[in-house]
Picture 1: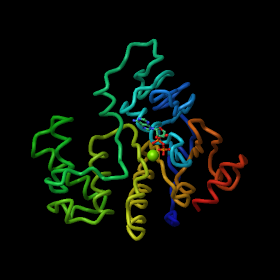
Picture 2: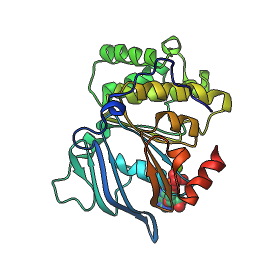
Picture 3: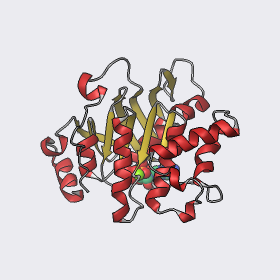
Picture 4: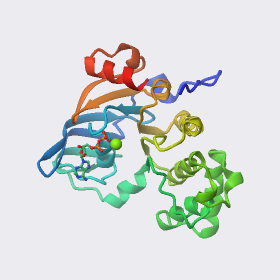
Length: 266
Ligand code: ADP
Ligand code: MG
């Protein structure tokens, strides 16, 4: 799916200035095993403010585990993880940050939208604003309406998930994550569960999020989107980063496995 850059594309601050300051997310020597199976074999990755990282690779290569490590859904077996200045992870010598803090800092959007079926779109977005941020019902609803407007769904505020298309449900899930003002947004194959005709609206929503300057890590097979949005593109296989690169990666990468994979998904 081709996602066209708007005619008057304004480069993001990251595109213009490159990395500034310390990384928002820093993975160093991250290893993760499930029993005898080592699925991450030493991942090093620095993600800077406003940077858009695209993670690609075959099924089982460890992409989801990388995302799940960044928001502490998985605890690394060894290595260190720094998110927004707090150090987490097995190998950390610094005081451990608290994971609730991390959950507030990192927003995540899953392949399956994970909306609450018994809540309206508005309440799906408002609920975490009340439970995590402690906003009053009135303030939470006002903020939720604002976020739904941002993804073009204010008109569907009163609808339940079952009354929305898959694309609309995913846009509500994006609004719900954005509402908490995360420092970084993680997307794990957010369009993989969608009918083909619904993919474009979700990619356009994600592109708008990218252009707002949000720091993002996106696992996707949508190479057209990756080419437009990826400041840093990372090809993983079998628990290691095989090759990574900046803009032009999809044309210029040199490792045979990356070339083969990109050709297969394009
Ligand atoms: P990807 O997202 O690239 O498809 P994953 O990170 O989901 O890959 O998985 C990498 C490997 O780790 C796979 O072999 C998968 O079966 C295994 N794995 C992932 N989660 C678990 C788990 N909770 N328990 C055991 N094995 C797991
Ligand atoms: Mg996965």
